[in-house]
Image (tube, rainbow, N blue to C red; front, side):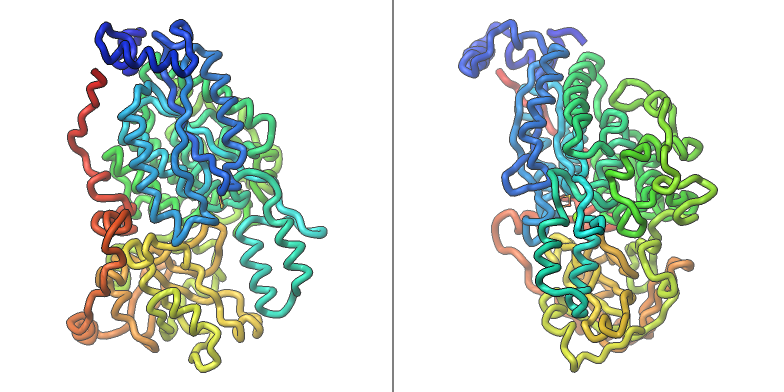
Length: 571
Ligand code: FES
Ligand code: MG
């Protein structure tokens, strides 16, 4: 590509009034003509915010990206975009994933941008930025925020999320007191960066790397390591080259890239949220990817990463053990290593020299954490569209289980009654939570790891079969059946379950059934009335009118579809 072919040239490079206007306003920015004319304009989309501890270093890190862009002969412009803080944004940042995706797409479309650097990492920020970038179609590179350092408490190493749930259960069971809780509060999260377990953040940034959208090794670098600064600068430099080469995101993201991302997510024992996000991302590029692809891949991919929530170690250990490149070097026979990544080279080139330095953290193929990948997709009369379970993170004897349902209509109902002594429940019961899907939640909150009743906890029960149309945090664990589709709010069969109904979970057989006669279910359906809409106005109303179900990615229908969307005329 030559300077006159740059997309930004249409804003800056001509003789018309508008070009003159854009140049005068660039002088107003304090930029000389020789600093930007004829150079690729790099939009740096930054999800930094004061409220997001996972991204608190990204304001400064953007400076390192700019350093790389300048050095390579580009013109960097930073765009603050919405932050989706997994911890603070309610009811759930999942409600806003598509909003950030829209913002990303429209910023890239409406401004004179030739290439994009996408800065994020906290859970939904990664798929949101990538979905928007896919729809915009420009050259784009992802700069993952990087995991935080290990947590510490007394002589214990703590993992985000995972150990919070664990010690909260200990507190509920009376095993620890306020003093311990105060100490834990200060030790669980001790540096900038994303959750350092194999939660949704680590899963999705790893997926971005395997898809070929980051520099090799980028996703494993701890947020505060000097290597993270260097990676940011190198990413800034690389995007300039990508613009000149016209290496667009759609060239990188083909069917093989998604197949490899699924393989890697499963070998990592990654978060169940990845099923929703990767399906949505593939949908943006009109690349076929379904839940069944995950199930089929899971049957042949071993889990090699020994990381919490189900394993022992944390992301910092993973980095020192060789990181994602090390793990991928053990899976090359299962990957498409001849495809192109943002480096402009092949995945095989990107993996050259990669190795594993600790077999206990990244296990050998003949000694995996689990012989099969981390998820199973279940179907049956309770989940015609499918449901998901991360069975390696569950108590194994529960994976074939029949028990009576104990039904909660929504999360408020669950909170109100779960510890009620009058609740008829045993460790064999199946906890059912409805009203928590994309529409009903709304936003499919991470309620899927339903709490175990206190009196059962006190008896030593640590896992039970739980079923919901919710999602589960990537740092959670347990025999939790998630993403039941269609959700109860739109009349999915979950809406018809009653207390005491026998529920059959059969993970090896991939079945989820309600053992109630069809005629009885039909009668219940006839008597069912849909709940009132959650929103009458605002973004929520837009969301409710267009959100799709979990099995197809929870995108908005009008964003997922292909169709004409004109380039703006800057003159
Ligand atoms: Fe941001 Fe976990 S809360 S990554
Ligand atoms: Mg999470």
